[in-house]
Length: 302
Ligand SMILES: [Zn+2]
Image 1 (cartoon, helix red, strand yellow):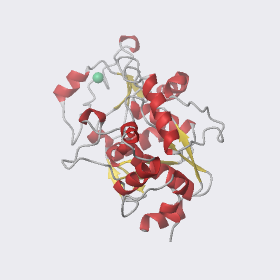
Image 2: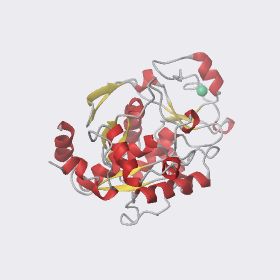
Image 3: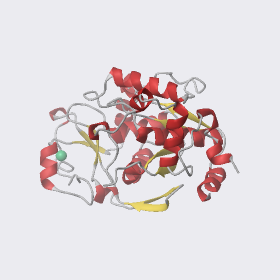
């Protein structure tokens, strides 16, 4: 497998990756595919897995979902390395608001941030980018007073950024054409996903980002932000296939897709779920059961 050779040549022992679910629902097979990629690569190539609960969205996050995530991972036999890395066992974005404020101050000091008074509806009415809403820069040069709104945007350059993904090869993206200036904090004073995840990855020394293809399009903007934040390591990237419906849409609870807890209640074993996820993710030829302790064999078996 070409990817195996690339991983072996690229990853030096001691690197960190993360499994970072949002506690806005229960884990389903899509999460299991990501977990199989994350844990199998970490165990086979000398990495550690950080478990981070991405609860930056305070409106949608629920303590009961966080508890269910931990229960499902325990049942699967997937254990994080937080303690070995001297990180909190319960690592949550909501536990460290100062981290995001401090990073925002550093960006502000460089003149890279400005207040944005636009509503979501105004932006939606204005402009549709290639595949997502593009902020047209309405407030970029009009000096909106700082105290008028807590919403803050990052000035992005116009350029293309190229990067290498371990699976896709070299790609180029132009964030200014895709999404425009990036929202860092919204009108409700909540940190955005794009911002919090980059600050966290730098703070926690994440050197390898393993996630689904749905996030591929936001890679260049995150790399640009990381550079502005003065990161010391440029992360390696691996975007893996997503489990999708025949019509191409993602699995989700709102579409009625079975959660891992429901599969467990229906009699599936943890090994069956992991084996099924490895198969769906293209890592083995069939859905043969796969114990967590043997995940490394997806990469090391002859
Ligand atoms: Zn604006």
